[in-house]
Every structure is written in C-alpha cells, then in structure tokens.
Image 1 (cartoon, rainbow, N blue to C red):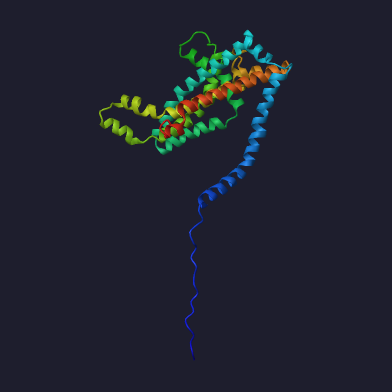
Image 2 (cartoon, rainbow, N blue to C red; image 1 turned 180 degrees about the vertical axis):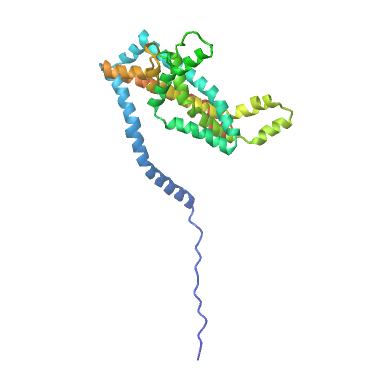
Length: 303
C-alpha cells in the first residue's frame, strides 16, 4: 500500500491589525454610549430643562412682556423682607446643623459596630417619619404650655413661658432637626475615608490632640462639611411646611411667598419670577461649591 506524501493543512495566522483599529473601536464605543444616553437626555430635557424654560418665559411674559416682575420683587419692601428672611434662616440653619452634625458624625465614626448601627438606625427612623408629623411634634413641644416650657419652669430656670413658636426660633429648631441627617451622612462618609495613619504620623511628629484635630482631621473633613452645608442651605431655601407651621407672618420665606402669590393672588408671573430667583440662587451656590471644593480639580492638583 503506497502512502502519498504527508499532506498537512497550513494554518494561516491572523495578520497584524489594520492601522488605526484602536481609534475605530473607540469611535464605535463612543457612538454606542451616546445612543444609550439618549433616553436619559430626553428625560432631563422634558422634566427639567423644559419646565425651567417655561418658568422663565412665564416670569417674563406675564402679565406683560418685560422684567417688571423681577423689578417688583426687588423694589418692594415686603418682598425684600421675605428674601432677607429666607437667606437669614437658611444661613442660621446651615451653621447650626453643621455644628451639631459634626460631633454626631464623629461619634458614629469612632463607635463600635453595634453602637454605630444603633445611632444610624435612630437617624433613619427620624428620616422615615412623615415631615408633617415631625413638624407638628415640634409645634407641640415648643408651644407655651408644651413639654419644654413646662420642664424649664419645673427646674426653676424660667418664670414665664418662652416664645419658641411663631417666630424664627421655632423655624430654626424644627428645620435643624429635620435637615440634620443631610449633614451627618456626608461627614460620616468623609471621616471614615480618612487614613488613620495620618493622625498617628502627626502624633509621632509631636502634635497634641488639638493640633491633630485642627491641622489634620478638620482639614480632611472640609469636603464633607462643604457637601452637607450646601445640601442643607439649598433645601432650606425652598422649605415650606416647617416654616409655615412653626413660623409666623414675620418669618415668611420665599417658598411660602410663591404659594401665596400663585394660589391666593393668582399672580402667576410674579410667582414664577420668585421661583426662578430661588432656582438661580441654588445654581449659584452649587457653582460656588464646585469652584471651592471640586474633588476632580483637587485630584488633578488644581489644574
């Protein structure tokens, strides 16, 4: 039996990839990413940009074209008082919330797992409770014959009940309690991300506890403080239920003014102008926070 020559199949290896294949692949991926982003862009367009544009148009066109609504808001003494109340209350609430939230976040960060989870559970239970219920509870606690005034009188600290509602004091107390978690959570995340070796290195270099806190720990917490303060300040600007329940006519804020202009006076153009001013203030605060505490710019060395 004759055997023919050994025939082997030649295997052709793939040649070198065509020139520019990486650029082509990157272009395809970018095209696919852009296509997948279209639904999100449409949602942003119809549920955010379009309402803001309509709000701006209404503030300019009603009741007649021009900037008359904005001029009336800024020239009227009553409206300027409302703007001043809004900024004052939002600023005070932000400062008080940060001062209270910082030690609470630190306590949770240094506690063991059981007590840390217990404290977080209390905060979550408070957040899950209805906003109206919490505001009404503070109304009961702070009124003239409420628990706080009766306790202070029982201890002999006061002879007459303190005025804690229908004024700025009640508004600040209620809003601080409700907005406190929005400072605690960013601060807690920032504190847990701090490398413990930094504090040990500072102590080895001769720094005492206060120096470690002021020069190492506190500067590392600045991004969390900024994020929490911005969130509280922006939310305070547009708060409605708590200021209405715990405040009075002298402490009217911008959100309450907008509701009054639209529902009671039917001045949609003036209400839209007030709402757009609130929106512009929010954007300005966010831009300032990005300018001062942008994490991406900090990671790049401030370039």
